Length: 138
Image (cartoon, rainbow, N blue to C red; front, top):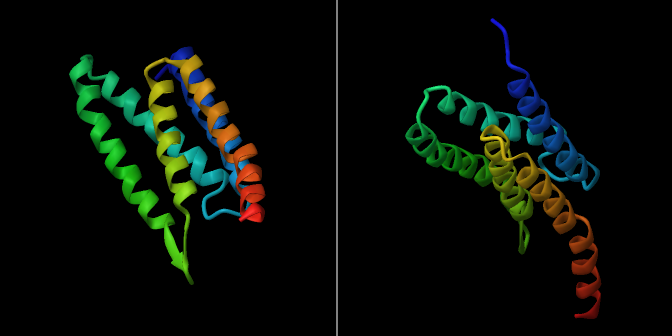
């Protein structure tokens, strides 16, 4: 079976963007890291490609709620309560957004996926610094 160049690019890009965001989570010692993020993005991309291979747009529309629901369960497993704080919300939300990036790559919206990954990193890195500064002000 010959795999089209476009499919290979989609798979590699979905893994690459997952790795990039997962690296930040790994460095921050969060519950989900490189492998989880790469798999979430790749899985969403694969489900999208599979539904596109059925040959109609309606199949993608039916697949999307399943992806979102599945990622919701994964995110729920990351969230936990520790003492008086809830932890893992940011990682769960970011994994949810990462699944959307995988879907975007699957449908060929590369620029939107890349810009979204950059925005996620901006939210995760500089915003975390800003939040810590605001906590000191309180």
